[in-house]
Image 1 (cartoon, rainbow, N blue to C red):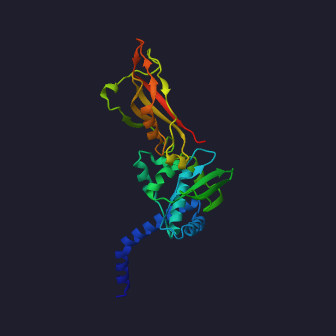
Image 2: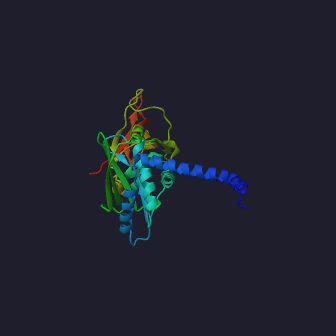
Image 3: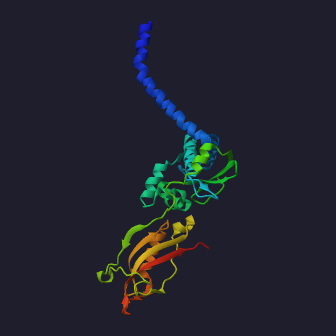
Length: 308
């Protein structure tokens, strides 16, 4: 049974499985090596996991979301995205009494709101939509560079607004792998809020005149706002400190009412819908056509939300 011939035959039968095992092992080692080329987050992740466990003691369950890291003085690059993903993976391996969300979980939630995947790089977006994922803690990172080093500040914040749960500053030399990723723009973050082609049309068919006339062109004047009160924030936007400008396109009818409203550039946390709802009730002095009579025109309207 233990003859050389039997050993050789047994080895030959096992070779295909050994080959598969070796391939899998090498693939795992290769992935680990690539992560190590950037930075070994295991010590920092272990320390932060301990702090999260301590902060979460007594709670029913804690769910953590790691957002894409932000480069303080440069446009976000793939390095910021990959480092955040690597840190999340390391933190997940040290998690005991909490769950670290997978990137795919967040992508699915964001897609339900017609937002591109790059929206994850915006903390205001995450703060608005994370609650439906059950997120209780958000981890963010801020990156700065010196000629030779990368400085990364990682912090943990609860959606309840608690600060100082845990923080870590990492200073590490810039590797060739880091420089390569840093030279590549972050995918999908260039235009977080693009055009929303959903069009709101007034119910009264007589007032939904379809027109191609644009205000200020072809003999048509501009409509003037008569009653356009300030649009209030949503509670979610206030909490997330989301601000900016919603750009709408609307037909201002001959009756001075907005028709066929569509969003050209949106804001998160329900601010785009809040802008549409407000425009519906605004009153305008209608534009006039080449004949001097009131006429419907297409008008761009900007609704700006300021935080004071």
